[in-house]
Image 1 (cartoon, rainbow, N blue to C red):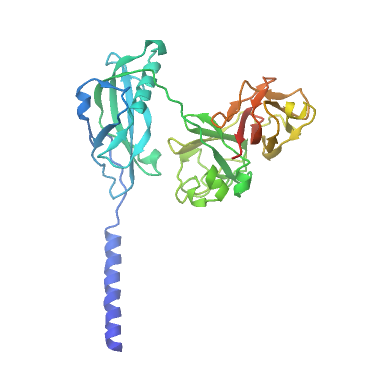
Image 2: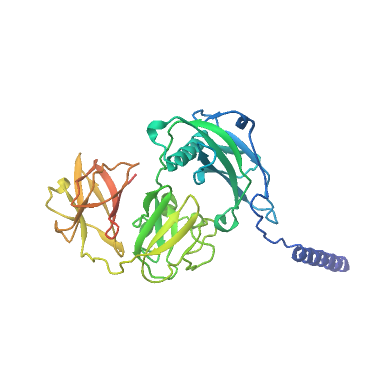
Length: 382
């Protein structure tokens, strides 16, 4: 029995060695195909004029590009518009992405938005719509998490479409900085909200330390400290001026140097960049606070500076029809307001020096302001 056991072990080892050798010999190599190396096929409806006001999705099909090995590939559609068929707008990317090249499903409203944006770029006015336009389409393929470095495009196809004026707003989500500033816990992250810029783009301006500065959390992941869902870069401590964002095994992104930068997170394109501020010596304030009719304009609710030039406080308003402002150093010489009524879907604004009183309903909120950019956020606590 012992000899049989030894023989079985030797056979198993040989099989394992052979398998490992085969793995090494056959190890796939990533190769980026060239543009137009895969085909986008026109849906049958493109032989007619397409009414983009219709609610039915349009399904495109494409070949699967060959990246050298089986990989998770994403597909996103891009459209350009023209009225004369010779002068074209820039390419407009739709929001929806797909994983199946045989069913690239795009809502008509997104195509209408892309075509509208293109026609507006070419000088068309809202009053001129509905309009008929020539439309070019192409599909962009890329490896999941490597959009910047692996994107390739199919050939183009052309069709005709009519559309009303459609520019649907892109809802702003809530993302938070976790890192060297304000700290590496979920509670600390919730004090450092990235400021929405529109179009699924978010920024945070502060003096960074220049080493392993940050990752990014969505709100629920910050509350639960779910590190597996954090957004970051591929290589820990990457200090490149721009790069790709991933949220699977993401690593900490570093600032290029220990100076004041605006960090931009482009959620739509899963990318980031650093822009160094020209003024590296902005005004320093002793305090920034809330003041308003909730305390008879007499007392200040002080905020905490959670990162250089970024202030935060959580506060509860106990009266209806609140009006308030942010001010510096407990003095009216520097204050920020806005023509703004805070709501759950309207939680960000840019402050105006000496501007209008901000309006708000009774409730508990998290308040954020950046004293360099004057950007403000007021987020209801649910």
